[in-house]
Length: 444
Ligand code: UDX
Image (cartoon, rainbow, N blue to C red; front, side, top):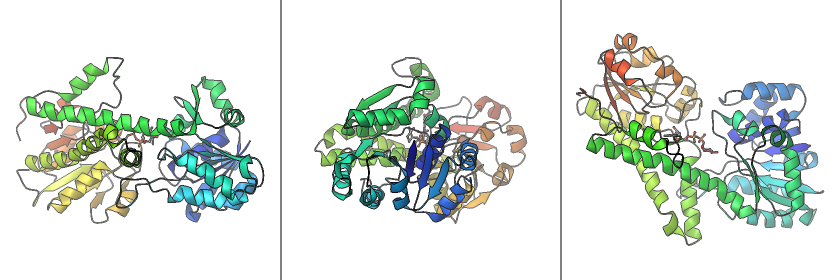
């Protein structure tokens, strides 16, 4: 089939490459010329394990091309996937719909034959209804251009795996013909994995995505709230999480307490959900999401407070090594990164902060140019009074605490992700602190 993927950020670039990988002829479209040139040359403009290979392979095979032209997209494709961003609107909780609107207004006037437009971006419920109307008004082919909504659940760092082997495929459609067309698009995936297929109306499909993200964010903030209680009462949040996770109704995943969630999705999606709920008059039902957001943001303050306490009450004259800049491991994405937020706050309070990350330093530098960056862990930790472990890269779990003890000024570490082998660090003479856990014999 001939597909276009409009918007080639994390979601679109992965979707385009994976659709080519399963055998379709794909045209990726973006307004960013530099990005399109890189992708056309088979280069991924961001860090995503496995994407480089399938991108290069499919560009090489001629199944995947790139363009900046929506006119060309309209001529080429029978199915158009919209994958542009819906960031938080400046000065508001709501989603900024300008990129969706620009794609629809740019594409629809060129739709001269039967076409299916498929929204994949995360949007406020009700978006598909107005986009349907807009396409109907603008497309020369009129009602023969239809709209479906097919939310995407991919996680950065696992994006290729999540696209080729999704947990489920959800489509919001307005006719059996559109559902059949989408089944044909995904046939290779459906055939090989017997993936659950959920076909529903447009509003429900939109809601599935925002509900999933709201639930995940709530789960993380729930365990982080329990971490505060553990700190107050002397419990261990990692054991609480492990023990409740054995209950199949609760499940163990997304119960890692620590610095909380960041990234380009969960924070802005729960805020947009709150804003949309208010427009729909059901703000009371979703009010808990405000608390989910507050609990999450307080993790960053709590980490800074604990760090300050660990270095004797003031950051002045103190060297602080920050391990991790990406919002999570296996990603170079620093959007709303809790780690960078903490690093910047400590620097503003007079600390000398040096940040390390295996892949995200360039992106971090672009957002926080005044922070000091180190290309290796040793350099970041040189003469440190405190190490903050803020993104749980495997590389940090594998560090040898005995070796590192010779580099720092004081062997003190705050494990902001509850991911380090604490006993090993303690055995090597380190003072270890964490959020939601108290270690026997720990003195600051
Ligand atoms: C998320 C959703 O998981 C995905 O389905 C959706 O399509 C996009 O948003 P992503 O932003 O890639 O994906 O990251 P995710 O793996 O969900 O992690 C989000 C944040 O939560 C990270 O900052 C991570 O460190 C944090 N997190 C995750 C925790 O603090 N504790 C956990 O137990 C799990």
